[in-house]
Image 1: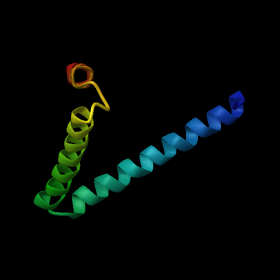
Image 2 (image 1 turned 30 degrees about the vertical axis):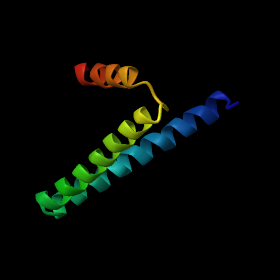
Image 3 (image 1 turned 180 degrees about the vertical axis):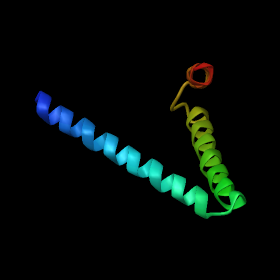
Image 4 (image 1 turned 90 degrees about the horizontal axis):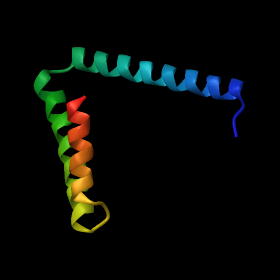
Length: 76
């Protein structure tokens, strides 16, 4: 178990990594054609949806709970 200083250091590193990733993505969006990065995002989203649908079809997840969780996120 982490002590409070280790936990705070871990949280700080995570926040720094997230900020770096956001800056990297913003730079990518600024330097690449809209159609290119939009197409890439579309592939990512479609693959996530396909995985979720396959998991539901295989009985690995409850599609009703999945839809409820999705709708809860959309309501925020």
